[in-house]
Length: 111
Image 1: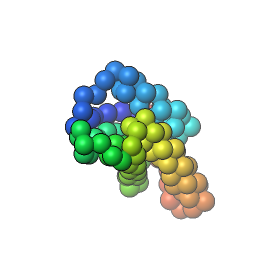
Image 2 (image 1 turned 60 degrees about the horizontal axis):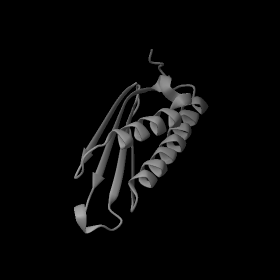
Image 3 (image 1 turned 180 degrees about the vertical axis):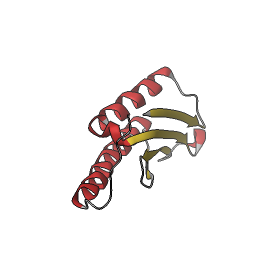
Image 4 (image 1 turned 135 degrees about the vertical axis):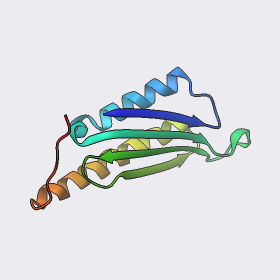
């Protein structure tokens, strides 16, 4: 799994980078074999004006299937990362469960 984290509108600090990596690795731990790429985009939409403007957008590339795109916007960047990772984990689990229920759709494993 390749993990790409980028920031727009602010400087990506080591703290935010490490926090995001840890949360993504934990969220995708059980489904790591099906994910080929993870793209995380962090943004400060309003800049210094403040408000509910910290966005975390996660795009998962699932092997052999359409991508999953999750986005969350909050006042706190860490909270936005947490909520997006949780939603990502639930969405991926539902997608994989649906694929298991329909055996005619082959689930490729990526090594």
